[in-house]
Amino acid sequence: MLLFLHVLGAVMFLGNIVTGAFWKVRAHYGKQDLMTIHLTVKNIMLADYIFTVPGIVLLLIPGHLMAAKRGYSLVEWNWVTASLLLFSLSGILWLAFLLPLQRKMIRYSEESLRLGQQTAAYRRVSKKWDILGTIGTILPLVSLVLMIWKPDI
Image 1 (tube, rainbow, N blue to C red):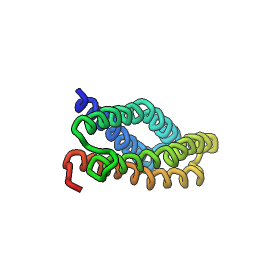
Image 2: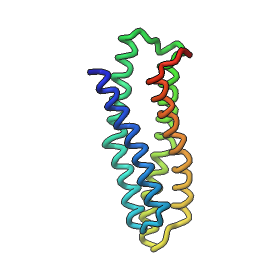
Image 3: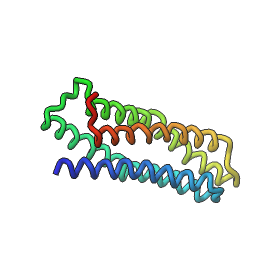
């Protein structure tokens, strides 16, 4: 049951961050209208609360329980701690930068709607989100590889 919950958490977490990035890129770079861009960035934030946050919980709690049950130390360097470090870095990036950027994208996309054209502020924040979001996606994907591969490190 723990493994099922852990894998479900990985699917919810990784599935949402990859899908959110897809829809953001599609709305923004697909030359969609301003309302589509606004609704997309709002729904990415909503999806984070519905899928990413529960995914994190389902990754961490069953993951820690399985690691303890199998005798993996969380204070020694091994594939579990390497995975946890990468996952934590992604979380810090999300909390410290991506969430505030998402809030700004929502605010600036509302402003763009009022003005009838995309603002420079929205474009600047969106570009930062794209770059940091890519890093924030790669880190847990590498963590997933470590979880599957389980290398001796």
